[in-house]
Amino acid sequence: MKVYLDNNATSPLDPEVLDAMLPYLKGKFGNASSIYAVGREAKKGLEESRETIARIMGASNKECICFTGSGSEADNMAIRGVARALRQKGKHIVTSAVEHPAILNTCAYLEEEGFAVTYVKPDGTGLISAEAVAKALRDDTMLVSVMHANNETGTINPIAEIGKIAKSRGILFHTDAVQSFCKVPFTVDSLGADLLSVSAHKIHGPKGVGALYVREGVPLKPLIYGGHQEGSRRAGTENTAGIAGLAKAAQLSATGLEEETRRVKSLRDTLEKGLLKISHTKLNGHPTMRLPNTLNLAFPFVESESLLLELDLKGVAVSSGSACTSGTGEPSHVLVAMGIPHEICRGALRFSLGKDNTAEEIDYVLGILPEIVGRIRAMSPLSPA
Image (cartoon, rainbow, N blue to C red; front, side, top):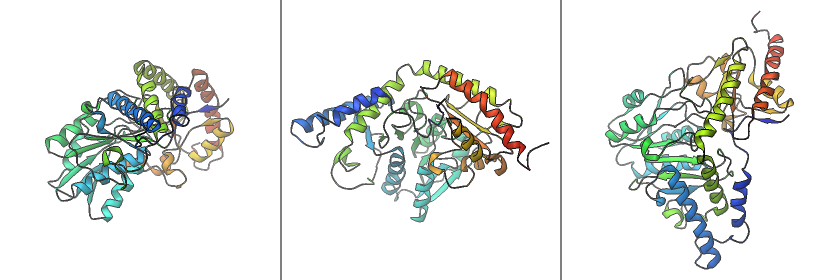
């Protein structure tokens, strides 16, 4: 049996999404900036996709949506774009220690340019409290960026509270919603976001396309200079096929979201309950304030790489954390920031479910993983007696 449980890394392309993309790879192939018929067809599709994304986000104006080449680009565009536009107002940024590398590495780059960054620590469940963010603010803070839901643990942060605090101080607020978009309900206003990043391939859309919501009036310097595409915020010919795929994926995911959330959460909870029966196994992340599809467990006295290889041999795909940091050999920065000991971090696995997963697949994993853990532990000199 083949079981894919790494949907937070990427998700399989929905056939309906592919069908929505194909016209822009064939007859409607034109450049959306061209004024003749085939260009106008591409432009029409581009703007219809913008309207769809704006509607699903609850954006008041479709022009607030800027399409990008990825969620990482959207994050970079938000952080670097605002920092460079407002450097005269202040050079202090507040973010969290458990952000995606697209945020953390961007902030590290800005520190080299003379900006100051405060990295707020999470509690033991990975939660970033609004109070901790408030304490980190300074008179020269011009941007706060805290992710909506963590990609490794699934922990959902109190973004609406953080957004209110930022607004009360006249500070712009960005949230990376790549993992939460169309997985939990929200609007940009309900979160209080001035900027919000999303990505297509986390919701059964194509890779290589994302979007950044930019509230009207928010100053933003572009990352890419050239033509006047995307309201002069992002130069380069738009990927109309990919953008159509993002819009269709979001539309499909947003439809029946409540029912699908219950179904996926039930599968996740069954998996969690079964795996926690394995001795010494621990949950990483908040027990309730968590994405419905995400489960991060630590299996002490076992290296996660060994588990990954054994599961792969059995046809099961999971991960030990963010795909963007795999291969570093270092324990998860998210789990370390949560105060989890390194020896526990090294035995962590992330299971992230999607719409294609079934109860039979969960039963299959529950049938093989306890034996795998037990067998590897039996060979470990650190294993308990």
